[in-house]
Amino acid sequence: MSLSNVSGMPAGQWAPIGFNLLVWTAAISEEMNPVAERLKTIGYDGVECFIDQQDVRVYQQFGDHLKQLGLQSTCVTVVGPDENPASESAKVREQAVVQLKGVVDRAHALGATVICGPFHSAFATFSRREPQPDEYAYSAEVLHTVGEYAKQANIVLAPEALNRFECYLCNTMSQLIELVRKADHSNVRAMFDTHHANMEEKHFPDAIRTIAPVLAHVHISENDRGTPGDGHIPWDDTFRTLSELNYSGWMTIEAFTRNDINFANSINVWREFSKPWDIAENGLKFIKAMQAKYANV
Image (cartoon, rainbow, N blue to C red; front, side, top):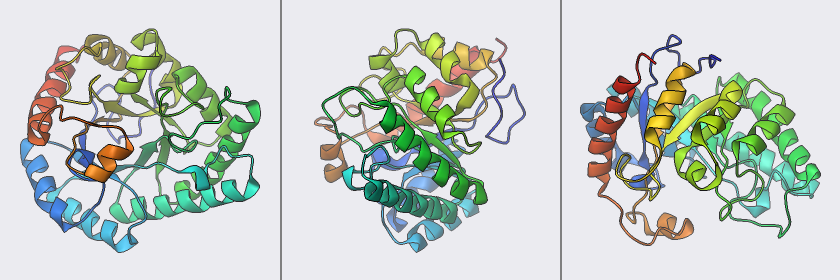
């Protein structure tokens, strides 16, 4: 199986490598300019930004700076219970469409090509029952609508499966691919996150092959959210399988710290795993070493 190419690179070549700014903050501002500059110097191809409700001009300005540096960008976002795509309330689902179209607008202003995250349903919001067929149908309808909007901006939506403690609608690649198929839109695909898969998948190669037909984005994230390569994620299985599938989309490091206290508290990060620049520098070296190891699989 060969994955279709969303990165703009020829099939068979390795992915561009990005770094998620959430290790420093959820808020984009000019204070992130020096961070982007150093990430470029280290050797990253792009950065990933969290999208919230800040003015579109904030993203435009930061995007302009990234372009000047020669950096690309991707985005990550979440939705809350008041804009839950899987809600039985039509009004809440309508608000989900409004919210996610706003995310598309901000991502477009930034110059991003991918929006990833668990926006198929409300983050850390539970119904206290197993996911229902209607919930998948509701979510798929919202994703299709927003996918059509994102198509105009040449942006791919890549919803993410989360672990059972943060989400109930999509925990596995099997659930996620069914949702994406129900959404039935070329701009609605999927992402694979190694941290969540470590908790929910039986076998990484099988999980990656399951999602392969719609895979558009990969988060390289250690089991403890620290520096990739320092924990027990099955990295050899991950990189070998992605190479076998000719994956050439983004590989973006997503790690967390307590730098942004409000964000850290919202995702239950209560201790420091690694220092931000240690993660960035050592994580990039690790990814490049693994890419080289499996370049000719």
